[in-house]
Length: 231
Length: 231
DNA sequence: AACCCAAAAATAATGTATGATCCAAACATT
DNA sequence: AATGTTTGGATCATACATTATTTTTGGGTT
Image (cartoon, rainbow over all chains, first blue to last red; front, side):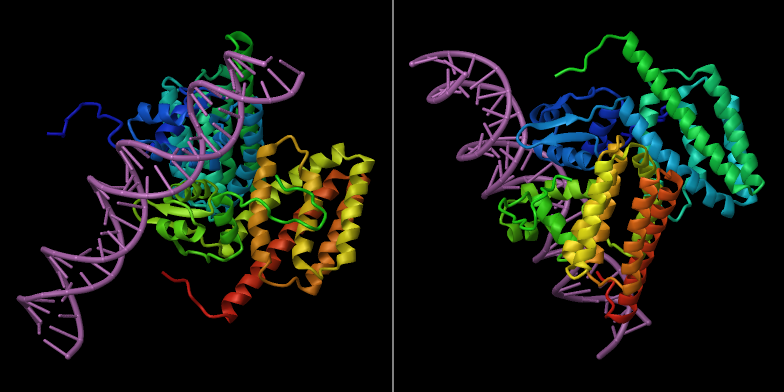
């Protein structure tokens, strides 16, 4: 009854938690920065009672996606250029450290996996931004996922998700594309050569480049599109 | 972060939020690591209904003080040696970066303030651990609080609170005491000399030393005291 | 008797609903 | 401008429904 053959398969089998839904709506921009989050509205919107909404908001607050003032409710934390700069800076500190460690434990198989993903990325050649994002995430995931410092890896992941969401809104410039491919290759090379310093340097540059790219686009969008810091 | 200076008399006139109460009870150890957090119990304990409790737990979850599994409730995140190691490693990456920046903007007045706090710390000479913790926090706060990267500074703050809570449980060894004083002085010196590299190196060593100290004590406590990973 | 397992009961988390307060902001009146 | 009033929402307290987990219980089996 509920089993559809469905050629392409639907991607939303589980209704996901309210928390995830709101979060997704925030980072995807459906709920705009600084926008007021009224409990009653959200409850209606997601078809639940107010309780789960309140809980989701508290969690989001803990993760800093949402700002709350007593008796004045919640609003979406504005994800602006500064915010991006901040998390990029942190990423630029953490990722090289994680990468360094990976260099010490990487096996032939790991490198093969990286090459494989990289090959897919190149085959795709940025034609499907969504898919590209997935692959790119997976590429770095291979490197970070086995690290013993789960805290650091989680931090990376959380930042990554925010950035991915933002990036989705604009295309990747040609020069950035080239840089991404080049840096991935260099990274693989450095890992293969067991050169932790170089690997760390490459990933640091990679992160910074990505940050610059995003911020430039945001700035551009801000200058071009209509403005509404709002409320 | 939102703490009043309040000379020495810091009373708690306001009942504080449920969130803060639970949080305090967790980091002060009143609720022990890994302990189950039953909503009904907590509600009784703090004399509220279940609603605020649920929300507080969600927030704590977002901040990673509490772990939740669907339909199995919340428990206090076990703060073990690995956890400490993880956050120390992150701190060891972030703090030097924050410090570096401070070197570039520090004024005479800033240095004077650091010296003043440091003098108080030395006068106190670890006789009151609680007060010492306060002063030590304030010392580093001076350095980080004005940094533009609020995200990084908040991260530091959160980590700091966890560490402070753990440290409260055991005394500071003599060698560690000496190291703390020495490193603070070196740090001030480096800042005064506008030597960012040295300042960063000092703070990195400071963080790592603190981590080692804590972990050693934890290990000792684990080996000595009774065991109970539990439930 | 000791052991295993599955049905039943107890426990708790999670969700819904509703009413009562309280607070901040906007509005109205002096 | 200073003060009172209204109002939208957040916050809190209950009560209850639903669902998943844990514990208990009562055989049956070795």
